[in-house]
Length: 234
Image 1: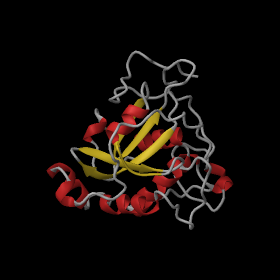
Image 2: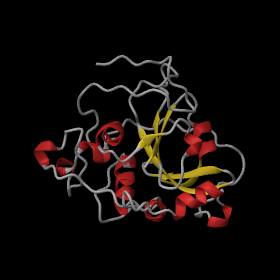
Image 3: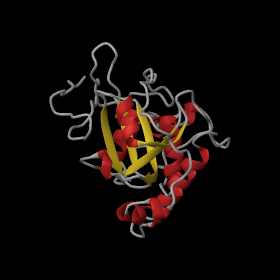
Image 4: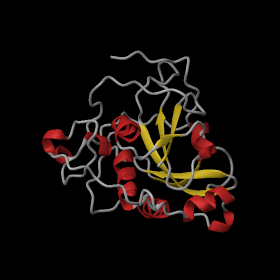
């Protein structure tokens, strides 16, 4: 197993890669448990989608953008994630740890295409497909660590941002939580969310497991001190 380079990663930016042991890590829906939440910042947290008038110019352009070159619709990704953030879509299987499965659904709604692999290839790092059962679902569809490697190495659909506050609508944030025993992340990604709104000069994100709609990035960062954050431009 590869060693974790703890000296290179900073909690507010992604400048190194997580551990890769050359094979599948997470059975779909089996991401490690979330840590106990720390107190949130004072002040109300909106659970309504932000309007275009509240967005920064860059974020407003991202929300309206439909990339003709790639065929991805970021507004559709975010709209799906907002709609099903609190109450999951009954069409899909729901896992007890559902964060990456949910974000994969939103990416599909925005134009991502599934791969053609079948059950014999579900553990392959270059396969991303949906099944009616856990046993027929690819690891990368619902395992946070596996999705990272699929997205960055095999999909040719994402790029890593050097700062998570550069994320726009439809972009994906992943978190490697600090372990309670050491206070440091261990190099294995635990959690996945999507940017679903921009307001007050920052991204707001939605996700599953601890189902949340439009949570400010500053609050997420505050609640996960010591974590490493991986920001993906989708």
